[in-house]
Image (cartoon, rainbow, N blue to C red; front, side):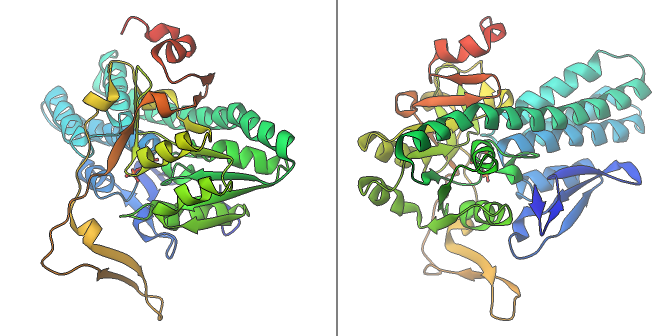
Length: 370
Ligand code: MRU
């Protein structure tokens, strides 16, 4: 996608040195475009934990490159396997909810274990990280092609700009390209369907106000940022045709973990008979988990993310300011889980299904035995 007219991915290899991975440090967007170099496994751990990169598919893709760099480091140690396993364990401890992190690290480890020599292991790790990135791009593109029919159907009925509400950033910045929830939106825009996106600001880290609004603006898509609690009112007033969000982990029964506040949007949509869609690629499913509401681990982050806000001052300098009484405690749960019964349909790279075990397995029959 574009930033100031230039095409970007969220992660790529250094053009002169493939052992260095470059990312956009998303903490500074939309005000500053800073490209960061990741050279060691601890750089990768920090980038994921401190959310220089974020969004479930991008966390997974970054971790895959982290495993590749861990292989390079392990090849210089005397105990390759032990070194690699320890690095994988540390990477897995960075963020608990997004299942892509675990799915894709395990996939990389399995591939690496399937070859014998150390140099083959390093080569395989790089090939797998590249494959994961290109697959993620392809899957997100497919999600767009599958999901656009839902937007087209609403436009065919109303002949008015389609009003879409989204929460957090499930855009290209959360993946490698296209995004998940935004992919059908970009596709509809490309096809000339008039639309407008209500962008939830998404406290406390404001991924909606900072990142989704930035992306949509760069692509010329009409949008309006709203305070998180505005969605219910807009739905009652008939100003939302559909909700599309992404997911950090969707269990086998169709329960959906996504950024904190998603559940309340689903409840409001249900009460107002507005379709609530969740878009995700294969890597964001947890096929081994039977019940998401009961089992998905919810990340708890620093309370300071609630107590402080970041922005630029009049001189354009990035500043962090305290917005609450200095002594008031705060708590910061990163995600919530929307029960499957509130999810109208799930949009994947393989098609659209009901949020149920039978619906999901009809698209992924090979996962039946897990
Ligand atoms: O805490 P974040 O910013 O990583 O949370 C991101 C989200 O909740 C996204 O909606 C989700 O990862 C889907 S991304 C395509």
